[in-house]
Length: 519
Image 1 (cartoon, rainbow, N blue to C red):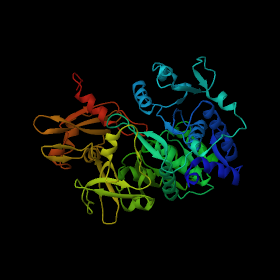
Image 2: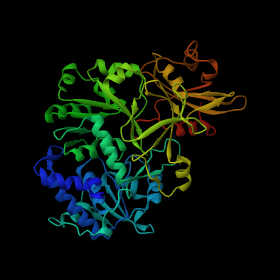
Image 3: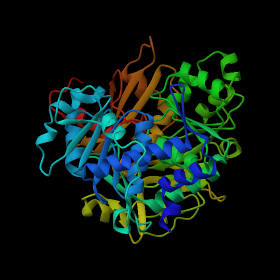
């Protein structure tokens, strides 16, 4: 039955069973489930007044805020497809995303007007309506979101079978990939997928009705929306939403609201562990601290635990959300592992012939089941390349041990072949990160006339460190086979990254290959 898999119905149900239970806390304001349900009704009525119908896309470029959640829920209820957009996009990237999604309505925060202004979105065909918050816009072509929604206070939307989701396979969200390997792709995610992602997260976090989840990750990303916000709403818990991550604010609200569950990326925990010991000790209410977003080293996990954060780990991607998980005990017992498959999915490792790899053999992680995307929006070629024989190919290379634990090797697209040998950049990066003068490193394959491809290491030196390219290459002596050593080394100040801190290696590679680049 579709309504039992529809997140908007969950809010309605909790508003009936526990109307005064706090659903959202934002900047000190508490919003009950009844208030949230009524607000979603208003947003639905506003969308209908604009002529938004089932199947239309509603794009949203907002920071973390209650309006983001209420639009997400309203679209879920109407059968409108919700399109969250990364607010860090540059104008050309935003232009491409909107042209691909072709939304009927684009809701954005005034904070991002400078990025949006030059795109002349109100001249697009087909027509794209524009709405913004906060209010007080002079431009009459931009609808005032708050005023529009307020005009429908106390109303409920008129819904029929043809004006709301009917089946669980209908599209719920189009979430764009971060574009680490090229143009972003819009992963079409169904209502069924959202539901089974929530079931997996429920098990992983051991969620309860009384749980309080602090969200510092961006809601436009799978981690914030599908691993944190949606599962907590499913259980009737409470969301403490931060506009963005700030270590001081994080500690204050963990203590103030007695937060029980938390998810962060490595950069978040690196900031948190720098706080005073007494501040970290105040986090005694936290029952689960989870980490994900990029590959972790055992040394980093030991460092986090020594600082008081005993972490359980997740691994996933936009197209599937959580794929693999490891408990706190697994993290200690199986260092470097990313865990075992989630409950509601079939996850395996395939070789190039499409057969399941035996333990110890490197292959590609594939998945099938209710958590996989339906397709890439408007891109049948990429869809067919990714979903083959019913299996979604993740592009991640891994091996599995005898106990069924997965160990990431690298991205299939990152691997390069030098002199006939497969080279995995992640293996080189792991070695070089142990260099005391190296803060971070990213290795990419670049063309070479002799070897076909060679490794180029982009290196960020540590603060005040004196480091030369020869030092970097020499550090590989005795730790890596010579064919794996980077032949080129560039010392840089920073890396281009995605919203979750993943290095955008395609951009690094382009920067190297561009003529006249200083090297």
